Image (cartoon, rainbow, N blue to C red; front, top):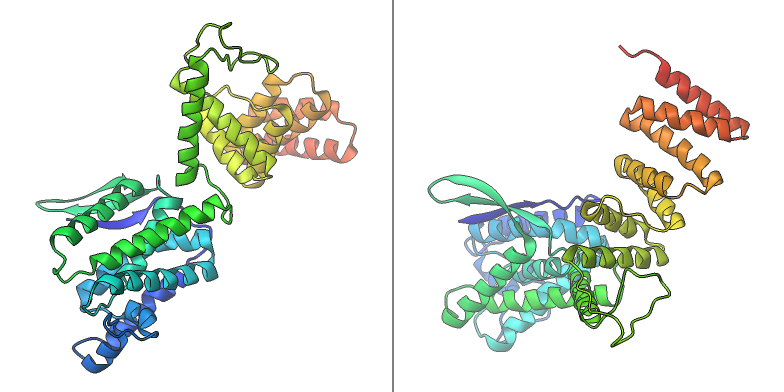
Length: 384
C-alpha cells in the first residue's frame, strides 16, 4: 500500500486556505455525519435524480466515515498546499469549490446514486498539479511486509491514479466509489491548469507541462533542421542553405544547451529573471562553462545575489570576469560585488582579498573605497 506524505516543492507562503478547507471538512464530519445526523446528511449530499443547488457545494464537505475523510484530506494536504501557493488564496478557493461543482455535475449526468465527499474537489487539485508541477517529486510511504519511503514524480503518480480510476469505473461502476466524480475533477483541474499557462494568466515555470511540451517540440525542430544541413553553431549571420551544407547531427547535450539558452533569453525579454535564473542553473548543470551575453549574464548574477543565491551568483560573476575581460567599468563593479559575496557569505577570504584589492585600486568613488577598506580589515581580523 502506498500513502503520499509530501512533495519536494518549497512554499513561498503559508497555505492558510488549504489548511482551513481541511479543518472545515473535519469539523463538518464531527458535527454532521451519517451515523449522528442521517437526515441532515441526506439533505446535504448530492442527489443526481433531484439535485438542489446548495448540494453541489455541501456534498463536498460530507464524508461517510473516518477513512473516507482521512484519505481525502491527506491528498488535499499533499497536493493542495503547492497549488494554493501558485494560484493565490482567493484563486485557489474559487478553483477548489468550482472543481467540486464540476465533479458533481459530471457524476450527476450519468449516475443516479447520491454522492458525498471531497474526492471530486481533490481530484481537480491533483489534475491541476499535473499541469503545473509534473516533475515535482512526491514522497510515498510504502508498507506491506516492511515499511519504507521512496520518491516518485508527481506525473507518474497522478497518471497512475487517473488510470486506476478509469479502469475501476469501467469494470466496477457499482463498487460504492464515485469514480466518475474523480474523472470529472481530474479533467477540470488539468484543463484549467493548462489553460492558465497557455493564456499566461500564471507565470510560466521551466518544468510546467506546457513548457516541457514546448521544449520537446523545439528539440524536434532542431533535429529536423540540422538533418537538412543547418549549422546552429555558425556565426549569427549564417543561414540554412539546402543542398550546400553537409548534414550536421547535434548531440542531445547540444540541443539541450540551445533550448535552455533560448528560454533564458525569452524569460529575460519578459523581465522574468526568476525563471531566467532557474534556467541558468539548469544550463550550467549541463555545461559549467556556458555564459550568456554580458548584460544578461550580469542581470542573472545580480538577481541571484538579491535573492540570496550566493553560490550560484558567485559562479555567474566569475564566468563574467573570465569571459568579458574588455569591460573595465563593469569589471570594477563585478569584482566589488563578488569580493563582498566571498567575504560575507562564502568564507573564501583569499579570493575576496584579491577581488576587493583590485576593485579598490580601480574605483574613484570614496564611499566604495571606504567599503573595500572596511571589508578588507574585517576579513584580515583573526578568527578564533
